[in-house]
Image (cartoon, rainbow, N blue to C red; front, side, top):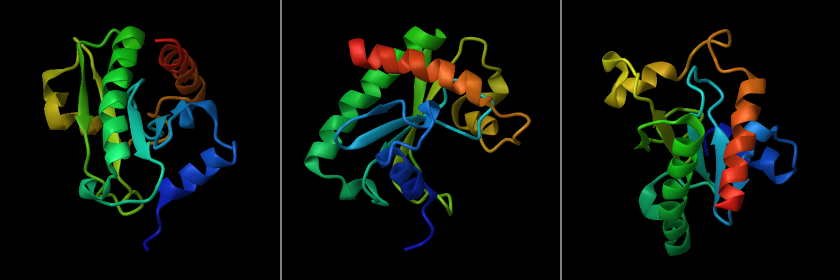
Length: 151
């Protein structure tokens, strides 16, 4: 198997060594984390807890839990960020992230036209100096966690 950074991050969550932003919420089959290399506050990722590389490999239980979680995380982002809606994207093509994961991205009202739709990925893969800071990621993570635990 190729190097899977996603599996390493999942192991870190399993051992309770992950910061809040990387372990916002966990279900039986999925983890919710804030993307670490984005300049957009609230860019979340839903990660399957076991290593699979294609959607057809999901179990029935994983698939059922996923649908509900996408809806709940989208509601949490709307309540937390005030976004108009969310984009939901899945590729699992990055060399270090072949592991199935879904990007749940807040689409704000003031998002520039040149970043709408698939061009939203211009906010991902940014330099450390452009990325959302750990403090801000933890702040939104706490709010989203509270929403998911109470709603």
